[in-house]
Image 1: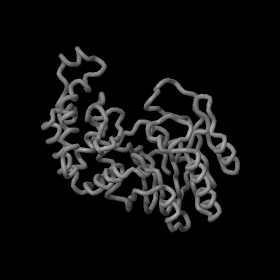
Image 2: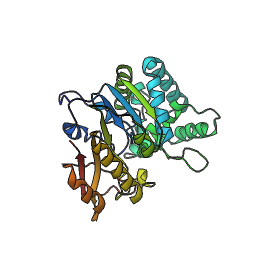
Image 3: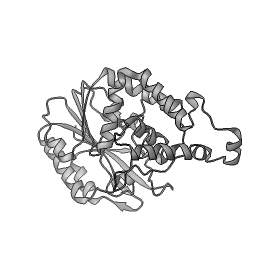
Image 4: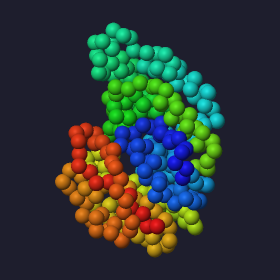
Length: 303
């Protein structure tokens, strides 16, 4: 991996994704990768910054995969998509410094720390309502709800309704640049997506020489919103699958947390002793608690 190449950020802008860590993590990745396999894709900041011939990407969240497929399908229609974004921003009166739809000075003075949220609250509410009540879901609208939503999260209630409140954010040049970078990757690389359970996904792959699996699962001992459905049983099953990959000579790297605010993942600590372990400076942020944390984040490899 060329360290001088500019890093690409996922247009999902997930809190706690690997964008800030990818330069450090990929130093430990293999030089030659035929197929890059990722069972816990998330926003995609890792695959966007890895050189490979093919990319096989998976996430159990069907909405995440639907957005990736949608953005990939728009790679050859970039100008038309940007025009649609501009139209929606104007229609719902959302802040967008890229298109000069800016927050009035008066509102900035009244709400110096939260003026984006105050400006966007009404339009975002209408956008969310229109999305939830529409029969045919517009994935561009869902993408905008992600961008303007609190903590850039995708979350739905039991009725299937998107239910994230407005965030204190703007559609700025960074968002547009992330989209443009994503389109470049989608045009230049062979990428396939699936929305399966990680066990089914990994066990169904037909691996060959120089394939590489990068695994960034939910962290057992952290408090993130994304980790609600993860448990010790799944953690153990993942370790078993990685052991089997190792037995077959398939290279893998696993990102995880071995210690978090006084808690330890003892099973992980014991398991990783048979592999190579590299300490990683963490940027982990919890949805429930953004105070300073004591974290030991690691990258575990079998090569």
